[in-house]
Amino acid sequence: MVYWNQKKYLVPEVSMRKNISVEFTNERIIPSGGLAVVGAILGKSDFVKRCNRMKVDCNHPQHQIKNGDIMLAYIGMQCMGKPSFDAVREMDDDPDFYKAALGICYAIPSAETLRQRFDLIGGSVRRQILDENIHMLKSNGIVPSKLPCGYVPVDMDVSPFDNSKTSKEGVSRTYKGCDGYAPMFAYIGREGYLADLELREGKQHSQKGTPEFLKETIGICRQLTDEPLLFRLDSGNDSAENIGILMESGCHFIIKRNLRRESKEDWLKMAEENSMDISHPRDGKTVYTGSDWKEITYRTEDGTEKQVTIRMGYEITERTMDRNGQFLLVPDIEVNTWWTNTDFTDRDVIAHYHAHGECEQFHSELKTDMDLERLPSGKFQTNELVLELAVLSYNILRMIGQESLGKRNPRLKRTVKRRRHRTVINNLVNMACHITEHARKLVIGLGRSNVWREVFSHVYYAFEDFVL
Image 1 (cartoon, helix red, strand yellow):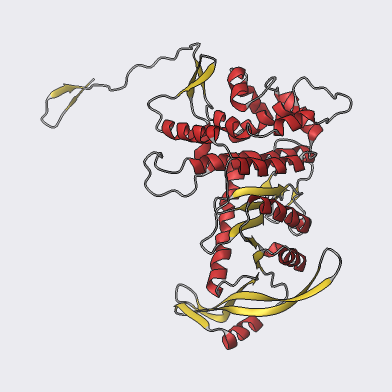
Image 2 (cartoon, rainbow, N blue to C red):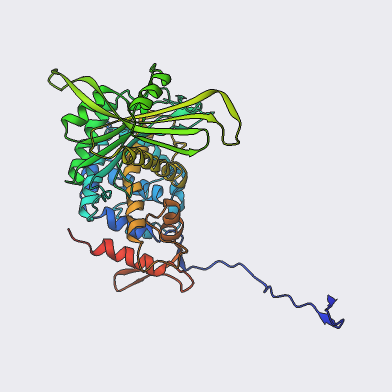
């Protein structure tokens, strides 16, 4: 084929594309070399041994594939972003590598074995998993970071899992208007480490079971840090019982209030009379910021009633004109109030609560990046075990992401303070590598075209060599 150039010379067209052929080789090229880091993190505890000693079925007390191998294989699958039971078949092509990388002693389970064993175990190992999560974080030197004010943030929130068009046990209508589950999560630190979670039916109110969950979370957080804790909760958990638990535990909190039947006009009148912080962001918009106090009554664990006066921060907005300059016949009043026992300024209380919205990103990493929104089983207790194991896999990915930050990163356009799970999975866990065995060692070879190879090497040896 020929064409005319600008000088009207006849020039042949040259194709830059080379012929490409596909051939199969016997080389051991693994698509998920980053599981070696996952195994290095998990290999510092006796969690697997405790799982192996656990009896889950009296009719078959001795299983050929131990419970510990079941747990390790599935945590590896979650870290690859593949929680479906059938995804374990991807390990069949080179089981020796996956066994060595994850520390599996006996064999890679089949998809059927994995599903059946999860059905047997169910939610019976919740306490062991939460204890292992604490040990895993502490044994790798993880300390949740503080806010500039000196408090360690703990964000608790419900995030619906959309499991529409399924008949799974526990799936029902959530407050988001979809059919699914409504699990509760608790994150600690500015990095967003997952401290606790609980799978709930979709129709369950966010406050039901929260007092017990809150006590459990406080105990976990106390083991992870000695710094003062700042709990941040939404209006669905506006309860005197929650406030009582936090105050009796010596924790600080900012809880969005539920106005219920309180009059917005009364709040506006109070703010006009008492607020010392009045701003006018634009014409027709006035914002009143301040604090008020109110008495609440709660019961302690021994049944004693206590009455305390709690500070209420407020932000009240009155709009007489919309943003386009259209006057409103009836002023629009927006009232936001918060319970708090901190000594923050009114604006700082509001800013710290707005920072609580960052946990929506953590929910997204669980539901989207790790593909856990549509849980794999039809049984509630099996899905409960799947989500509880996600505490470990989520934190492993967070640890890898945080350790990858620093001078060894590939060139970035901006400073990164927290690496998203999707980036960790794509670039560090699902990393193609060439496997060879030499001098009784398994050697992971990374190609020169992989810009993440130095980051991977740094992260692997950081966790492999770390000693508490």
